[in-house]
Amino acid sequence: MRDEFDAVVIGSGPNGLTAAAVLARAGRRVLVIEAADTIGGGARTDEAFGGGIRRDVCSAVHPTGYASPAFADLDLTAHGLTWAVPGVSVAHVGGFGTVGIHRDRQATATELGVDAARWRRIVDARDPTALAGRILELPALSARRPFSVAGAAAAVLPVDVVARMFATERAATVFAGIAAHAARPTTSAGSSAAGVLLGMLTATGWPVAVGGSESIADALAAVIRGHGGRIETGCAITELGQLPTGCDLFFDTSPDLIARLFGERLPRRYARALRRFDYGVGTCKVDFVLREPIPWTRRPELMAQTATFHLADDTMQIRRTERQVAAGLLPERPWVLGGEPTRVDPSRAPAGTHLAWAYCHVPAGCDVDVSDRIIAEIDAAAPGFRDLIVDRIVTTATDLAAHDANYVGGDINCGAASLRQLLARPVLARTPQITGIDGVYLCSSATAPGGGVHGMSGYRAARAALRRVTA
Ligand SMILES: Cc1cc2nc3c(=O)[nH]c(=O)nc-3n(C[C@H](O)[C@H](O)[C@H](O)COP(=O)(O)OP(=O)(O)OC[C@H]3O[C@@H](n4cnc5c(N)ncnc54)[C@H](O)[C@@H]3O)c2cc1C
Image 1: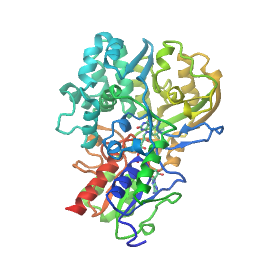
Image 2: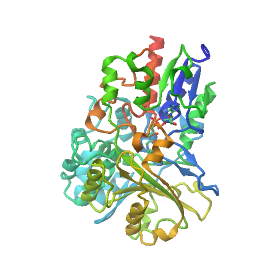
Image 3: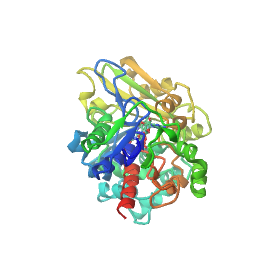
Image 4: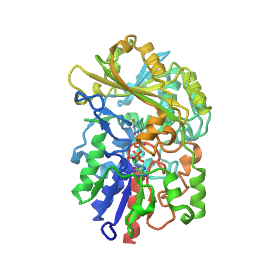
C-alpha cells in the first residue's frame, strides 16, 4: 500500500473518525482501519435486543458532542446527524427529593433556591457553548480564563471541598453527581473538573443523537467517504508491519499500543509519560427493554423531560461508592447514572416499547455483574420498575474492555481523570497528540481534553499534521 495513502487512522472511535474527516476534507488520501466489525468505538448502536430496538452500547448522552467545535466545523448535522435536546439536562433523584437541572437557567435557579447564586458562580457561564469550545480546544485549565474565577478554582478542587460551598445537601449532591462522571475519589484534587464542565453544559443541553449514538459515527463516516476516504473494519493492528509505510499514522488507541509498537524509537520524555499513564476504575452497564417508562414516584412530569438521571441519596453515597471502587471493592449501594433515551427519541424502539440504561462504577478489571445492585437503586426510586423489565443486557467492565481495546480494565475514558492527567494527558504540551516521532500521532481520549464523544483529540491531531505539511 506504499504511496496509496497520505494518512492512516487506526481506530474508528469519534476521535479517529474526526481526524480522518478533517484530513480527507483537506485533500489527504485517508484510510481508517478498525478492529471491530462496525465503526464508532464508544459511539456504536446495535440491535442486540432484536425487534428493531436500537441500543447504545456505550455512550448515550452528548453534552460535549453538542458543544464540540470539531463537530460544528465538520457540519455533522448536514451529514445526517440530528440531536434531540431535552428541556431538562439531568434530573437527580435523592433523599431530599428530585431536582431538575434545566437548559433554562431561571428554571434551574428556582430548583436550587438558596444555592442558585452559588451554582451560577461555580458552573455557569454566559456563553457555555463558546466557553466549552475553548476548554475542549486547549489543554485543560489553560491560562485563557475559560470560565469564572470561582469555576476555574473549583475545577481543581476535590468534590468534597466544592460540595461544602453549597448551603444545601441537594445542590451539593447534584454537583457531586455531575462531577462523579469522572469516576474519581471525591477527596482527590481535580475531581470537580467534570462537574464544572458538564455542569456548565447543562445550560446548552445534554442531548441524545436521534437513532442512536452511531448516528454521530455515521455522519463522520459520510464526511470521510464524501472526500474519497476509505474505512476498513475487522482488522486489529498488533504490529507495525500491518501498516502502510510513507504516510502519517494516527492512533485512536490506548497509549499501550503506541508504546508497544514504537518502543525505543519514542523520545525518552514521551516514553516515560506513557509508562506513567494511569487508567481509571471500571464501569458495569445494564441496558433494559421495558414495558413502560420507569415509574418514578416523585415528579414524573419532570422525569419525562430528560434523557439522563442520577440516583444518590446524598453526597455520602457518591463519596462512599467512589472510595470503595478506588480501593478495589464493589460498591455496597452504588450511586447510579442512567437514562431513558425513548423519552426524547421514540425512533429507538417500536411504539409501546421503552429503553433504559444505567451504570455504576466498579473496580478496574472487575468481571462481576452488579446489575442487581443497580436495579435495587432504581426500584427504590421507582417501585415496580423491576416488574417492567422485558429484557436486559449486562456489560461488565471486562466485557467493555473486550468490546473496545481502549477501555483498559473497563475504564470508559481510556485514562484516569486525575489532576496530573487533566494537565498532562499524556504529556504537558500545547498539542499533546504529537508523540515526538515524525508523522505519528496519538489521538484517542487518552490525550487532552480526555473522555467523551467530542472528537477534539482527533481534531487537534489532524490540524497539527496539516499545519506541519503546509509549514
Ligand atoms: C459504557 C460507556 C458509556 C459512555 N457514556 C458516554 C456518554 O454518555 N457521553 C459521552 O460523551 N461519552 C461517553 N462515554 C465515553 C466515550 O464513549 C469515549 O470517551 C469516546 O468514545 C472516546 O473516543 P475515542 O475515539 O478516543 O475512542 P473509542 O471510541 O474508544 O474508539 C477507539 C476505536 O479504536 C479501535 N481500536 C483500538 N485498538 C485498535 C487496534 N489495535 N487496531 C484497530 N482498531 C483499534 C476500537 O475498536 C475502537 O473502535 C462512554 C463510554 C462507555 C464505554
